[in-house]
Length: 102
Image 1: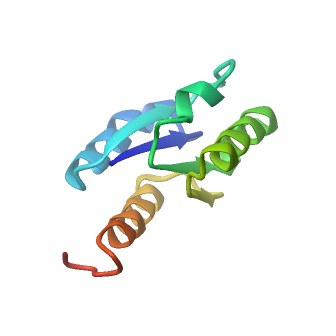
Image 2: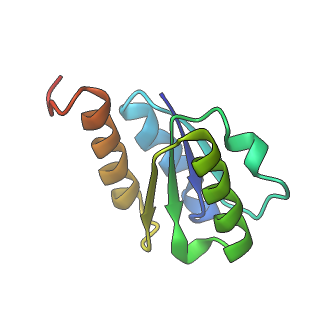
Image 3: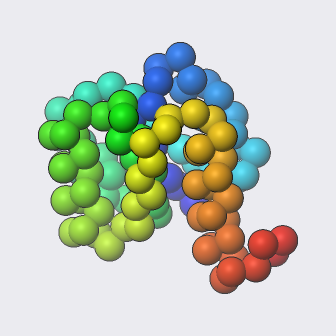
């Protein structure tokens, strides 16, 4: 499973990647404002957007890509590793058909 993280803090990028690795998830991290982010997101399975650390333009472009490609989006105001862990845990449960320990 490939998940895009949009927003967050540069200094936590290493920790975000480690947390995703523990869940067996390939994480693409976009902590900085990227031009034309939409095409980079079209092949991901889900998106996590940390709304307090992303510009309105990037959020709008990510949401457009999500709608166009039917990608589920998790939005949170907090941008810590624990918030990402919770999102990835939800994705794992969804992927396993609602079974927590599958």
